Structure formats: structure tokens, C-alpha cells
Length: 240
Image (cartoon, rainbow, N blue to C red; front, side, top):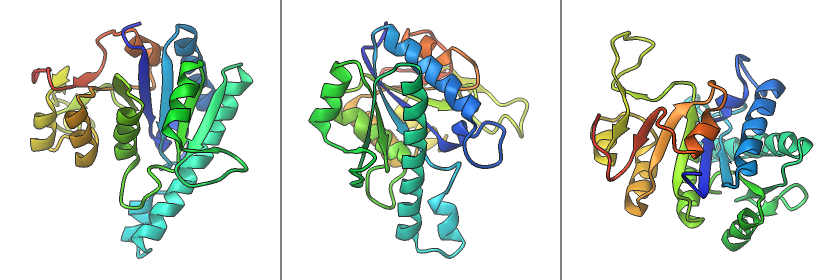
């Protein structure tokens, strides 16, 4: 394995597949199977999952809802996704723990850094729910924060596209896909790999980010094995 300890960032939208809303059990089962393969190969995996398939705080805020309240509702949505993913993993025999930044002792452990690391060392998949526990911060920022806290070697951001482009490939068929980028280029060109706070955290802690297509079966395993897929963002990378 190219990496020993990794953090996988899943958007909530990734869990709904072609549905307009909610969770597609088949998609979740497929993701769980790939994660199981990674664990079987010996890598330690933590996951941060979003909640956009159920509720988006920014969208609700723009419609008039108090921003902090909207973000807290979004955090609850991430916990729903985390528990769903936990169930899919445990049904195929993968030991899993959900930790939340907001106390929910009946359904999940509170987030404790040392406990999370210990779970990883024992071969358990740790799923972080409820974001950072604070409004006004995205789950991208949570992913960068948790990756730094648990000493993850890399962040894998699984998306619906096969990497980072210089413009929207759906709107421009001539859009260029990058194979590698620097943190600075991502920020100055506003390429939306992750939000600015997340990129700054990764840059400060020298955590590379690999962006790839979740829809291509096997990409999670290939990424952990170090295959060059998607786009890698890092301090030692060149713009290419």
C-alpha cells in the first residue's frame, strides 16, 4: 500500500446516486465494498461524510433561515449518512465506529482524537459525523482538520468528476483536466477543490489531496495503492 493511514471525504450527494434526494442503498453498499477491500489490504481508513443529499445549510440560509441554525441541521444530516454507512460496512463484517462532534451518546461516540487513533490502529473504520461541531465551517474543512489531528498521510476526495478542471467540463468540452496542482494554484485560480480554509489547513500541515471519480468502481482501492488517477494537490506538486 502506498499509504498506511488515509482520510476519505465523501459528499452527501455521492450517497444518493441518481436519486434527487436521500440515500441510494446500492450506492452505499458499493462504497462499503470498496472500503472493505482497503481495510483488507491493511490500510487504516477514516471517513468524513457530508449531508448535502438530505440538507444543505448554505442553501437554507440563502432562503432566509438563520445560518447557524441551518448549519446545525446540516450537521444532523451528516450523522444520518454516517450511521447508514456504518450499517453497510458492518453488514459485510467491517468493524466500524462513528464519532460525532456533537454529543449523541445513544447512537455514536463523542469525537476524541486519541480514541479515534486507537480505533484505526485496531483496524476499525472511523466515520466522523456532525462536521466540526461548529456552524460556518464546511465538511471539507472538517476533513482537513481531522486528517491533521489523526496524522493521515493523504485526503481522498471522492467526487462525481474524474479530477480537477480549469473550468466546468459540463459547460466547456475543451476544459483541461489537471493531473497535479499546487495549493497556491488552487487558491489563486479558485478551482473549488475544497474551500479555502480546508486548502490552507492542508498546506500548513503538508497533507496532499487526491480528487477522483467515485463512480468508477475500484478507484478508492487504486488511490490507496498509489495509482495515478484523478488530480493530486500538494506542496511538492507542479501545475500539470
